[in-house]
Image (tube, rainbow, N blue to C red; front, side):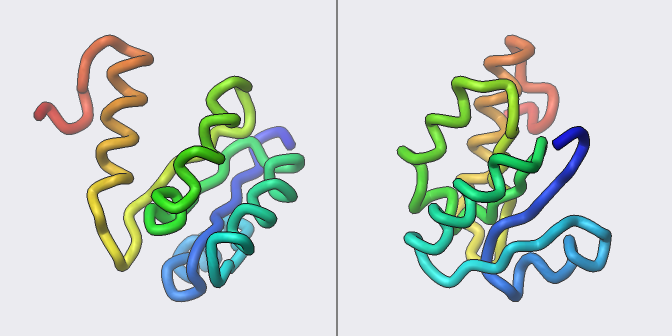
Length: 104
């Protein structure tokens, strides 16, 4: 698991990450995304998840907050809802006590 990164999301969004050497796991729906996350979580330290699926799996993702690894990070996708930015801002404020990333 040490240092391994993966991305889970729609095939069209994860292509860039795959080209950069990140292990990519395309998913097609909420159920498939949940199953893939369960499997990937065993072997990866950082998992990027496109925000369209992160929104669908919001309650499921809470279980990852209880452990140090894996870190699951929602990222913007073609269907930008603002959830990825809001998640990162909240995590930053919890960890550091201040928003140093977006300054909103």
